[in-house]
Image (cartoon, rainbow, N blue to C red; front, top):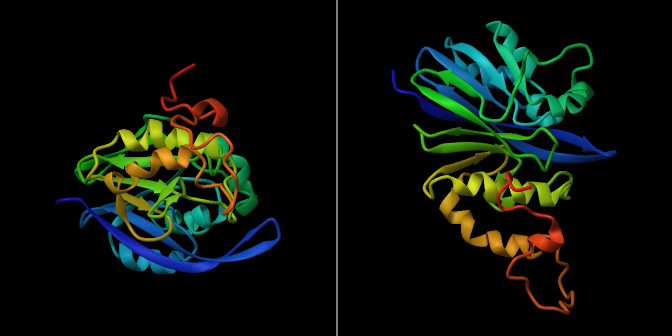
Length: 238
């Protein structure tokens, strides 16, 4: 059977530092007619499993430990005794939702998950959370980016960027090295391609994401904002 990508949209409320935010989440399902992997089982296990149907769930992969990434992870995984995977740096976040259990697999950079006739490659993309990851499927021409990168640019958490320099390093050094026609499938919003977003990267680095309208730019726009922001275009650079 040929693998394909399916989307399930769920709705709910997330509490961030005492403020409730109403959100829609994309849960992505990758697989064929027999088996699937579920990415970011957000909040509605019943709706997700309805889409899965009688297919076997091999794994539930969480691109971050935030509540709207893991809220239905245990229930979705338990139906078929599937494993739950999370980067170990996001275990403290996981514990805020699931106090009496832990994920089964500690994901690492360059790890691989297989389903149907394709594989998902783990790419560490921290910024929104310390253990944020993206999952690249070359065969399907798609990367599942969680909140790291969305159709409108770098994602936020509660309207803010928790670690923007790390996030932009992840985007420039990892996600924007992928082919331009790669589909960007995030946890929120519509899909876009790497080629659609990459031309905006220099503006993001030079401060457009955090600049307040009317700010005076005494030294003009930066051609390379990495010196001030701490952004590394190549995450392997020392």
